[in-house]
Every structure is written in C-alpha cells, then in structure tokens.
Image (cartoon, rainbow, N blue to C red; front, side, top):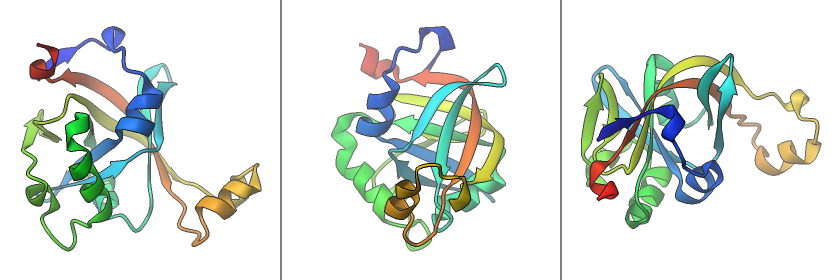
Length: 170
C-alpha cells in the first residue's frame, strides 16, 4: 500500500459506495471485526475531508467502531464480491468471518485494514448520532427502510490517510 494525497483521490463516490461496496473495520480488545456496507458518503465537514458511515444497532461491528478511536474503510476489487456478500450477512459474533473469507488483516498506524483492498481510507471518528424517526422529512423513507425501528447511527469520520494498493496500479 502507498499513501496518496487527498487531492489525487479520483474515485467516483457513487460507484465506490453503492456499486463496489465498502468494508468498515475496527478493533476492540485486540480483536478486529468488519462489515460490508453500501450506504454512506464522502465530503467536507468542519473544513475536514470526511466520510459519513451508517451502522445499524444490531451489527456486531458497531461495538468495535464505538470503542475504537479509528477505523478503516476498505474497497476490495470486484473479484471479492462473494466475500463481500458473506461478510455482510454473517456475524463476527458467531464465527471468525475474516478468516473464513480468506482475507489478510494488516495494520496501518494500529488501524486494521485488508491487504487485498485496492483502496483503504484510514479514519478517525469525529461525531456519532442515532437517526431518529421524527427527523425524517420524507416519512416514506422511515417506513420503507426501518420497519423494525432499528435506525442507523451516523458517524462522521475524518479521512486521515488514503492508501492505494500498489499491485492494482501496475
């Protein structure tokens, strides 16, 4: 992995998040956990380059993100689509899903990420807030996406480092 400057980041956020999917990975008590996500955003907030990530309360990875100061957001090549699907449906509470997905856990400045990732964002948490039913202006969204009232927590995380897999750049 090599670090690239924020100004050289040329990914299409719509494709990266909604099409390629992401892995949110954090560590707690020396153990890492990850989850697949296809909702979120990138932008500027408080004059910082940030990502907006969303995690439902029942997700095991939420415990890890809540306890960690930093986390990674990884984008894997499309050849890992099956593994991304698996990591999004199986809980780390029940099994060592990272090992079963045959992914290689690495650390950058003590932040866990995956060697197989084509792109990794090293992030520091800035803000967290639970979404609330009464805050939805378009009420159909709450009804459609939260029939169980299990509203996501939104995290605003500062993108401290952007890492590219050098193998993918050859």
